[in-house]
Image (cartoon, rainbow, N blue to C red; front, side, top):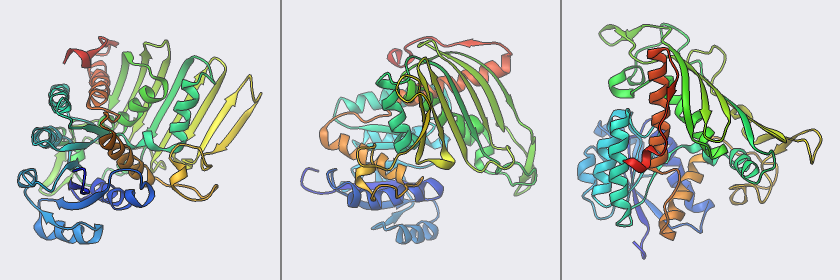
Length: 381
């Protein structure tokens, strides 16, 4: 591995598989300091479809049996882009085979699976095998800068955080059934799909852990058209929660896939004792900064200048970056950690902590009461 490019296998070639394929195809061109990779194989269930996707996305080969792929000596890193119910089986098998693993979020469909994956990751880590979870919004330059500003104390101790991730692709009751609407394949609805990102951002930006949750969830459309007629929707369409943290902050959380007019709207506001930060995914190159002591007002920072996180790899100042760049940054960070022999972030432990919060949201909504989370759950696994 020290004298040849790392062979990458992506398992899954739909939405996320396409985004990740773009990242593996581009990462070496823009981050030449990280270990080189080769796109060894793209894996899918349908031989004809995955072969066509492999050709389109720049892969050397395609395959339909992920287990056979794990036996290949030319595959060093496995990128899991599958529905949630398949994450644990594939990721744990890859780690056991000595392959580095990138697993899409959420880490798992439930706490038991997430805990098992953490145990597998720790065992593999002791042998130098690295693993990470695909929370790609950590790699938005504006949010990476926001984390730096919070950590530096520029806005003071964080008091309040507002998180809202709203989409509208399920607003129409006639929208067809998909695996994302079945609990057995998706685990949850807007919670796992959208709240996982939001909760990870709360932890990432503040460094706090969630200590209690009070929540409500709703399934507004109870059934959807399936291939054999109407099918029951067994996951949530939307959720609302109040989260308290061990840093003394309180956060509001709202996620929905039925918010008409919101195509992919993630907004984050962080309020500290001396200032505040604001972010809108629909303006993802901008960070709104209010610093009472320094600026005396609010400035909108265009996060495209040299020295801003990740930006040195790309275009001249002012030339904006896009959503797809976050996956390139994610690949670069993982490769750099592999090359340096360090553990990448977010870790499987981070994925477990997010899963704990999602589980607490569901429990609180079901029981109608506030749920208190015990500290240091990952350490107890």
